[in-house]
Length: 117
Length: 107
Image (tube, rainbow over all chains, first blue to last red; front, side, top):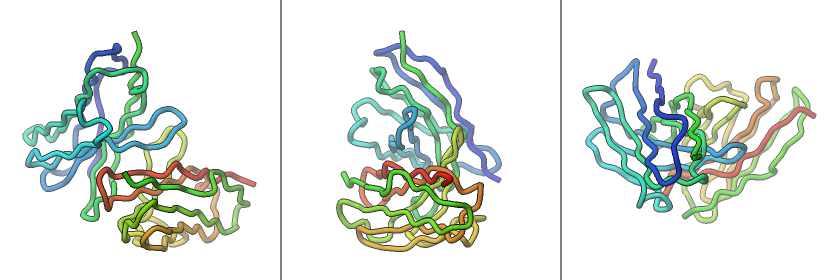
């Protein structure tokens, strides 16, 4: 079965760029939309953006100026870069796959990213 | 941006009882509504999409209904493993947005 695994630094300094990668295993990355979603401790879920395997992207307008997503189909991976981070970007970051109805049917386990000097 | 409002924030229910969770959208999202379950330290799990279609492997005690702006998730007979936080999500408009969650706790 398809599984997702996030990876990247758990600690990022303020004003720097957060970089995460999601590796897709047990299936192909092709022909799906792949999203990043985050959740601050004790709070709700925020959709960051998505990328199709063609490379086309959609970003949350609230983060659009700071977000870049990319995909590497040869490695079955997609990535997130969030620039100029502040403490408000501290959260658990999830990668997720959207099914044909755009609901998120497969999620990674999540990775905690703390923004602190 | 569409605002999703869930009520109540916390629902206290005894095992075996029915739980009814509500989700309201600030404008119509048609049937483009999903429900997720999240337990502490875990990622959300998809329960319902298309407002009423159960995801693969989801027990029949979970059901969803509604369209437009008013939606309901019903758990017909709560099991111990169902105590968790539940989120609704609309994917009809950009950006996709989630509700604030309903915590279902043991009474």
